[in-house]
Image (cartoon, rainbow, N blue to C red; front, top):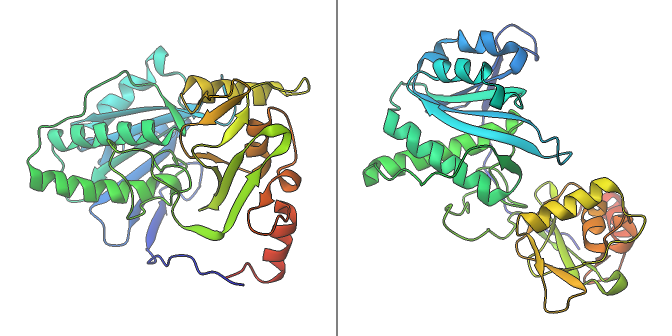
Length: 317
């Protein structure tokens, strides 16, 4: 049996290596687009600051690895009338030593105002908080409400473009679990976590080892444990330190909550993992093979067997 995923329109993306090398400044824009992104590693930040884009009003993101949780990013979001002034200040700020790369987003026609920048900053911060893919360095700040309704609509279209550009430049931090960047079903920041989209209806799996009761889907490029799934509270003795930190962080973030049964924790939101084994480890409380212990909901095949069948029949599409 084959299944077709929802079709998406293609987009043209223009990447420009300013000095001909991927380690230098890179600009990116969608084919017919109102915004341009400019990216640089921290070592190339002086070249980015000298760019004409950095003299405009815009928003920017600073990112670097989180030393407390491998694989997670620390992110700071800001805005400015002249972005270069803010970037230079952050580069000299000891509190911002964490960041290793920066991206700024400006209007190609220079139509962004300070109010637009503040609105986009607030919306990006809210999206990062909801997605839970990175830890924000920003303090708490109420969303900016000082735009008329037509301009809010314009900025939401700009945000759609930003959501597509940022993952291309390594800032995949805005989308909810299992959702494509820039998907039409993107929920507003005030809404609950969106269910995975672009999920193959054939790709539903269960994990029931040692009393756990979890469900997951392959969606987009991720393995997503679904809200309501139950994970073991007690970790096995051989549980690795990295896995312990991941589970502790999910508890601290309110993603894993106490359940009615004290032996288990409940997933409060759909939660994305890089692999079935990563998801299985959190559910089981120890390192375990996702290929063996996730079972296809309809056929009871292991995930590994299901993958072999998918590859054998050309991916099922």
